[in-house]
Length: 340
Image 1 (cartoon, rainbow, N blue to C red):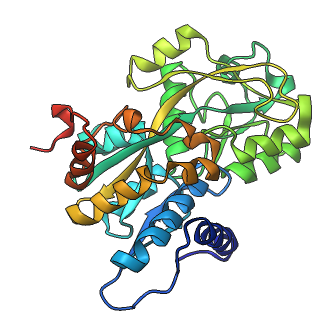
Image 2 (cartoon, one colour; image 1 turned 120 degrees about the horizontal axis):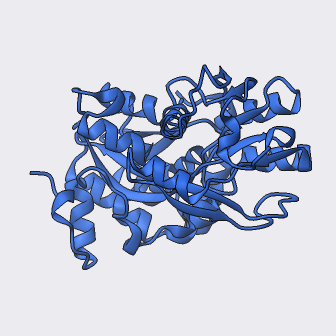
Protein backbone atom coordinates (compact mmCIF):
# COMPACT_ATOMS: atom_id res chain seq x y z
CA UNK A 1 0.00 0.00 0.00
CA UNK A 2 1.37 3.42 -0.94
CA UNK A 3 1.95 5.60 2.11
CA UNK A 4 0.45 9.14 2.16
CA UNK A 5 3.87 10.80 2.08
CA UNK A 6 4.64 8.91 -1.11
CA UNK A 7 1.54 10.05 -2.95
CA UNK A 8 2.59 13.65 -3.61
CA UNK A 9 6.01 12.63 -4.93
CA UNK A 10 4.56 9.93 -7.15
CA UNK A 11 1.79 12.22 -8.41
CA UNK A 12 4.18 15.02 -9.29
CA UNK A 13 6.53 12.67 -11.13
CA UNK A 14 3.63 11.04 -12.95
CA UNK A 15 2.26 14.41 -14.08
CA UNK A 16 5.69 15.58 -15.29
CA UNK A 17 6.18 12.32 -17.18
CA UNK A 18 2.75 12.65 -18.79
CA UNK A 19 3.66 16.12 -19.99
CA UNK A 20 7.02 14.91 -21.26
CA UNK A 21 5.78 11.79 -23.03
CA UNK A 22 2.22 12.77 -23.84
CA UNK A 23 0.91 9.76 -21.95
CA UNK A 24 -2.41 9.22 -20.24
CA UNK A 25 -3.12 7.62 -16.87
CA UNK A 26 -6.58 6.41 -17.96
CA UNK A 27 -6.68 2.60 -17.93
CA UNK A 28 -9.19 -0.06 -18.74
CA UNK A 29 -9.60 -1.95 -15.49
CA UNK A 30 -9.76 -5.37 -17.13
CA UNK A 31 -6.66 -7.47 -17.83
CA UNK A 32 -4.20 -4.94 -16.48
CA UNK A 33 -1.04 -5.74 -14.54
CA UNK A 34 -0.53 -3.52 -11.50
CA UNK A 35 3.08 -4.16 -10.51
CA UNK A 36 4.72 -3.24 -7.20
CA UNK A 37 8.35 -2.11 -7.01
CA UNK A 38 9.97 -2.44 -3.56
CA UNK A 39 12.59 0.24 -2.84
CA UNK A 40 13.91 1.45 0.57
CA UNK A 41 13.77 4.42 2.92
CA UNK A 42 12.69 7.72 1.36
CA UNK A 43 15.91 9.51 2.38
CA UNK A 44 18.12 7.49 0.05
CA UNK A 45 18.34 6.78 -3.68
CA UNK A 46 16.34 3.54 -4.01
CA UNK A 47 13.03 5.30 -3.48
CA UNK A 48 13.25 8.19 -6.00
CA UNK A 49 14.73 5.90 -8.66
CA UNK A 50 12.04 3.30 -8.00
CA UNK A 51 9.35 5.96 -8.30
CA UNK A 52 10.88 7.13 -11.60
CA UNK A 53 10.95 3.57 -12.99
CA UNK A 54 7.36 3.01 -11.92
CA UNK A 55 6.22 6.30 -13.42
CA UNK A 56 8.01 5.57 -16.67
CA UNK A 57 6.50 2.09 -16.97
CA UNK A 58 3.02 3.43 -16.21
CA UNK A 59 3.16 6.31 -18.66
CA UNK A 60 4.63 4.28 -21.52
CA UNK A 61 2.83 0.94 -21.05
CA UNK A 62 -0.50 1.68 -19.34
CA UNK A 63 -2.43 2.59 -22.46
CA UNK A 64 -0.87 0.15 -24.91
CA UNK A 65 -0.26 -2.86 -22.66
CA UNK A 66 -2.28 -2.17 -19.49
CA UNK A 67 0.90 -2.45 -17.39
CA UNK A 68 1.34 -0.05 -14.47
CA UNK A 69 3.97 0.02 -11.73
CA UNK A 70 3.99 1.68 -8.31
CA UNK A 71 7.02 2.09 -6.05
CA UNK A 72 6.67 1.56 -2.31
CA UNK A 73 9.19 2.26 0.43
CA UNK A 74 10.54 -0.57 2.58
CA UNK A 75 13.36 -1.42 4.95
CA UNK A 76 15.57 -2.06 1.91
CA UNK A 77 17.28 -5.02 0.29
CA UNK A 78 16.66 -7.63 3.00
CA UNK A 79 12.96 -6.92 3.20
CA UNK A 80 12.71 -6.62 -0.59
CA UNK A 81 14.07 -10.13 -1.08
CA UNK A 82 11.56 -11.48 1.42
CA UNK A 83 8.75 -9.56 -0.30
CA UNK A 84 9.71 -11.12 -3.64
CA UNK A 85 9.75 -14.55 -2.03
CA UNK A 86 6.31 -13.93 -0.49
CA UNK A 87 4.89 -12.54 -3.76
CA UNK A 88 4.30 -9.19 -2.05
CA UNK A 89 6.07 -7.29 -4.83
CA UNK A 90 6.95 -7.92 -8.47
CA UNK A 91 10.19 -5.97 -8.86
CA UNK A 92 12.74 -4.71 -6.35
CA UNK A 93 15.93 -2.72 -6.10
CA UNK A 94 18.58 -4.74 -4.26
CA UNK A 95 22.18 -4.15 -3.24
CA UNK A 96 24.75 -6.23 -5.06
CA UNK A 97 25.88 -7.82 -1.78
CA UNK A 98 22.38 -8.96 -0.82
CA UNK A 99 21.69 -10.17 -4.35
CA UNK A 100 24.84 -12.32 -4.33
CA UNK A 101 24.18 -13.70 -0.85
CA UNK A 102 20.50 -14.44 -1.45
CA UNK A 103 20.79 -16.06 -4.86
CA UNK A 104 23.74 -18.23 -3.84
CA UNK A 105 22.46 -19.10 -0.36
CA UNK A 106 25.34 -17.44 1.48
CA UNK A 107 25.63 -15.21 4.54
CA UNK A 108 22.21 -14.69 6.17
CA UNK A 109 20.72 -16.94 3.46
CA UNK A 110 23.04 -19.88 4.18
CA UNK A 111 21.42 -23.02 2.82
CA UNK A 112 18.32 -21.10 1.68
CA UNK A 113 19.09 -19.79 -1.82
CA UNK A 114 16.52 -17.36 -3.21
CA UNK A 115 16.27 -18.54 -6.81
CA UNK A 116 12.78 -17.20 -7.52
CA UNK A 117 14.20 -13.91 -8.82
CA UNK A 118 16.19 -12.79 -11.85
CA UNK A 119 18.08 -9.66 -12.81
CA UNK A 120 16.94 -6.99 -15.25
CA UNK A 121 19.80 -4.50 -15.06
CA UNK A 122 22.46 -2.82 -12.98
CA UNK A 123 21.04 0.58 -12.02
CA UNK A 124 23.81 2.56 -10.35
CA UNK A 125 26.62 2.28 -7.84
CA UNK A 126 25.52 2.25 -4.20
CA UNK A 127 28.09 4.53 -2.61
CA UNK A 128 29.05 4.02 1.04
CA UNK A 129 28.56 7.12 3.22
CA UNK A 130 29.76 6.45 6.77
CA UNK A 131 28.98 9.83 8.31
CA UNK A 132 30.06 11.08 11.73
CA UNK A 133 30.18 14.31 13.67
CA UNK A 134 33.57 15.77 12.80
CA UNK A 135 34.92 15.70 16.36
CA UNK A 136 34.87 11.91 16.13
CA UNK A 137 36.77 11.81 12.82
CA UNK A 138 40.28 11.41 14.18
CA UNK A 139 41.96 9.62 11.25
CA UNK A 140 39.22 10.58 8.81
CA UNK A 141 38.70 6.98 7.71
CA UNK A 142 36.19 4.30 8.63
CA UNK A 143 38.76 3.07 11.17
CA UNK A 144 37.46 5.87 13.42
CA UNK A 145 34.47 3.64 14.21
CA UNK A 146 36.76 1.18 16.02
CA UNK A 147 36.26 1.78 19.75
CA UNK A 148 33.88 4.68 19.06
CA UNK A 149 31.81 3.83 22.16
CA UNK A 150 28.98 6.17 21.16
CA UNK A 151 25.59 5.75 19.49
CA UNK A 152 25.86 5.05 15.75
CA UNK A 153 23.03 4.13 13.37
CA UNK A 154 23.74 1.08 11.20
CA UNK A 155 20.47 1.42 9.24
CA UNK A 156 16.90 0.20 9.65
CA UNK A 157 16.42 -3.34 10.93
CA UNK A 158 16.26 -5.80 8.07
CA UNK A 159 17.65 -3.27 5.60
CA UNK A 160 20.39 -3.76 3.05
CA UNK A 161 22.15 -0.79 4.65
CA UNK A 162 22.40 -2.60 7.99
CA UNK A 163 23.47 -5.86 6.38
CA UNK A 164 26.14 -4.39 4.12
CA UNK A 165 27.30 -2.05 6.88
CA UNK A 166 27.94 -4.97 9.21
CA UNK A 167 29.70 -6.90 6.43
CA UNK A 168 32.02 -3.96 5.70
CA UNK A 169 32.80 -3.24 9.34
CA UNK A 170 33.32 -6.89 10.28
CA UNK A 171 35.86 -7.19 7.45
CA UNK A 172 37.76 -4.34 9.12
CA UNK A 173 37.60 -5.90 12.60
CA UNK A 174 35.04 -3.32 13.71
CA UNK A 175 32.17 -4.91 15.61
CA UNK A 176 28.78 -3.18 15.84
CA UNK A 177 27.26 -3.58 19.34
CA UNK A 178 30.79 -3.78 20.75
CA UNK A 179 32.71 -0.87 19.24
CA UNK A 180 29.63 1.38 19.36
CA UNK A 181 26.06 1.39 20.64
CA UNK A 182 24.04 0.32 17.60
CA UNK A 183 20.94 2.29 16.61
CA UNK A 184 18.55 1.25 13.81
CA UNK A 185 17.31 4.37 12.05
CA UNK A 186 16.43 5.27 8.47
CA UNK A 187 18.49 7.80 6.55
CA UNK A 188 16.65 11.04 7.29
CA UNK A 189 15.91 10.12 10.94
CA UNK A 190 19.62 9.33 11.35
CA UNK A 191 20.65 12.79 10.19
CA UNK A 192 18.01 14.40 12.38
CA UNK A 193 19.35 12.40 15.34
CA UNK A 194 22.87 13.64 14.54
CA UNK A 195 21.59 17.21 14.46
CA UNK A 196 19.95 16.66 17.86
CA UNK A 197 23.13 15.05 19.30
CA UNK A 198 21.25 11.81 19.98
CA UNK A 199 23.72 9.82 17.85
CA UNK A 200 27.21 10.66 16.58
CA UNK A 201 27.04 9.07 13.14
CA UNK A 202 25.24 6.88 10.65
CA UNK A 203 25.66 4.41 7.81
CA UNK A 204 23.92 5.92 4.74
CA UNK A 205 24.79 4.04 1.52
CA UNK A 206 23.20 5.70 -1.53
CA UNK A 207 23.97 7.10 -4.95
CA UNK A 208 25.30 10.66 -4.67
CA UNK A 209 23.83 13.07 -4.03
CA UNK A 210 21.97 11.27 -1.23
CA UNK A 211 19.28 13.59 0.09
CA UNK A 212 19.97 12.71 3.73
CA UNK A 213 23.70 13.51 3.33
CA UNK A 214 22.79 16.75 1.55
CA UNK A 215 20.64 17.63 4.56
CA UNK A 216 23.50 16.75 6.91
CA UNK A 217 26.00 19.04 5.21
CA UNK A 218 23.44 21.83 4.79
CA UNK A 219 22.45 21.72 8.45
CA UNK A 220 25.70 20.83 10.21
CA UNK A 221 28.32 22.24 7.84
CA UNK A 222 31.86 21.31 8.90
CA UNK A 223 30.54 19.82 12.15
CA UNK A 224 29.87 16.59 10.24
CA UNK A 225 31.81 14.62 7.65
CA UNK A 226 31.80 11.43 5.57
CA UNK A 227 34.68 9.06 6.34
CA UNK A 228 37.17 7.85 3.71
CA UNK A 229 38.31 4.31 2.93
CA UNK A 230 41.98 3.50 2.33
CA UNK A 231 43.10 1.14 -0.44
CA UNK A 232 44.05 -1.42 2.20
CA UNK A 233 40.59 -1.22 3.77
CA UNK A 234 39.00 -1.76 0.35
CA UNK A 235 41.23 -4.81 -0.22
CA UNK A 236 40.28 -6.26 3.18
CA UNK A 237 36.57 -5.82 2.48
CA UNK A 238 36.81 -7.47 -0.94
CA UNK A 239 38.49 -10.50 0.58
CA UNK A 240 35.00 -11.40 1.84
CA UNK A 241 32.83 -10.37 -1.16
CA UNK A 242 34.65 -9.04 -4.20
CA UNK A 243 31.98 -6.57 -5.33
CA UNK A 244 33.18 -3.19 -4.07
CA UNK A 245 35.16 -0.69 -6.13
CA UNK A 246 36.80 2.66 -5.44
CA UNK A 247 34.42 5.62 -5.71
CA UNK A 248 35.44 9.26 -5.36
CA UNK A 249 32.70 11.77 -4.48
CA UNK A 250 33.83 15.03 -6.11
CA UNK A 251 34.15 18.33 -4.27
CA UNK A 252 30.86 20.28 -3.98
CA UNK A 253 28.66 17.22 -4.51
CA UNK A 254 27.24 18.26 -1.13
CA UNK A 255 26.78 21.77 0.32
CA UNK A 256 30.08 23.10 1.64
CA UNK A 257 31.97 19.87 0.82
CA UNK A 258 35.49 21.20 0.26
CA UNK A 259 37.37 17.91 -0.14
CA UNK A 260 36.74 14.88 -2.33
CA UNK A 261 35.52 11.85 -0.39
CA UNK A 262 37.47 8.67 -1.16
CA UNK A 263 34.92 5.99 -0.44
CA UNK A 264 33.79 2.69 -2.02
CA UNK A 265 30.71 1.46 -3.86
CA UNK A 266 28.81 -1.70 -4.83
CA UNK A 267 26.27 -2.11 -7.64
CA UNK A 268 22.52 -1.83 -7.11
CA UNK A 269 20.35 -4.11 -9.23
CA UNK A 270 16.80 -4.05 -10.51
CA UNK A 271 15.49 -7.59 -10.02
CA UNK A 272 12.19 -9.20 -10.87
CA UNK A 273 10.09 -12.15 -9.80
CA UNK A 274 10.43 -15.13 -12.10
CA UNK A 275 6.63 -15.24 -12.11
CA UNK A 276 6.51 -12.29 -14.50
CA UNK A 277 6.28 -13.28 -18.14
CA UNK A 278 9.04 -12.88 -20.70
CA UNK A 279 6.87 -10.44 -22.64
CA UNK A 280 6.22 -8.19 -19.61
CA UNK A 281 9.88 -8.05 -18.56
CA UNK A 282 10.95 -7.48 -22.16
CA UNK A 283 8.64 -4.45 -22.37
CA UNK A 284 9.85 -3.08 -19.03
CA UNK A 285 13.51 -3.45 -20.02
CA UNK A 286 12.90 -1.87 -23.42
CA UNK A 287 10.99 1.02 -21.83
CA UNK A 288 13.80 1.74 -19.37
CA UNK A 289 16.53 1.82 -21.99
CA UNK A 290 14.55 3.76 -24.57
CA UNK A 291 13.88 6.50 -22.00
CA UNK A 292 17.14 6.88 -20.08
CA UNK A 293 17.01 10.72 -20.17
CA UNK A 294 13.87 10.62 -18.02
CA UNK A 295 15.55 8.41 -15.41
CA UNK A 296 18.68 10.56 -15.44
CA UNK A 297 16.54 13.61 -14.77
CA UNK A 298 14.98 11.84 -11.78
CA UNK A 299 18.29 11.31 -9.96
CA UNK A 300 21.93 11.94 -10.90
CA UNK A 301 22.90 8.46 -9.66
CA UNK A 302 21.35 6.98 -12.81
CA UNK A 303 23.72 8.93 -15.07
CA UNK A 304 25.90 5.79 -15.18
CA UNK A 305 23.12 3.73 -16.74
CA UNK A 306 23.73 2.54 -20.29
CA UNK A 307 23.34 -0.64 -22.29
CA UNK A 308 27.08 -1.13 -22.00
CA UNK A 309 26.81 -1.09 -18.18
CA UNK A 310 23.55 -3.06 -17.94
CA UNK A 311 25.18 -6.35 -16.95
CA UNK A 312 27.99 -4.94 -14.80
CA UNK A 313 28.11 -6.52 -11.36
CA UNK A 314 25.09 -8.80 -11.84
CA UNK A 315 25.26 -11.69 -9.37
CA UNK A 316 22.33 -13.77 -10.69
CA UNK A 317 21.02 -14.79 -14.13
CA UNK A 318 19.05 -12.36 -16.27
CA UNK A 319 15.33 -12.81 -16.76
CA UNK A 320 14.56 -14.21 -20.25
CA UNK A 321 12.67 -10.99 -21.08
CA UNK A 322 15.76 -8.89 -20.39
CA UNK A 323 17.92 -11.31 -22.38
CA UNK A 324 15.56 -10.97 -25.34
CA UNK A 325 15.90 -7.17 -25.35
CA UNK A 326 19.67 -7.13 -24.89
CA UNK A 327 20.15 -9.60 -27.73
CA UNK A 328 17.94 -7.45 -29.96
CA UNK A 329 20.30 -4.58 -29.16
CA UNK A 330 23.30 -6.67 -30.21
CA UNK A 331 24.68 -7.41 -26.76
CA UNK A 332 26.41 -10.70 -25.98
CA UNK A 333 25.11 -12.40 -22.83
CA UNK A 334 27.81 -13.97 -20.62
CA UNK A 335 27.08 -17.66 -19.95
CA UNK A 336 26.83 -17.16 -16.16
CA UNK A 337 23.92 -14.74 -16.69
CA UNK A 338 21.83 -17.35 -18.52
CA UNK A 339 19.76 -19.64 -16.29
CA UNK A 340 20.26 -23.35 -16.88
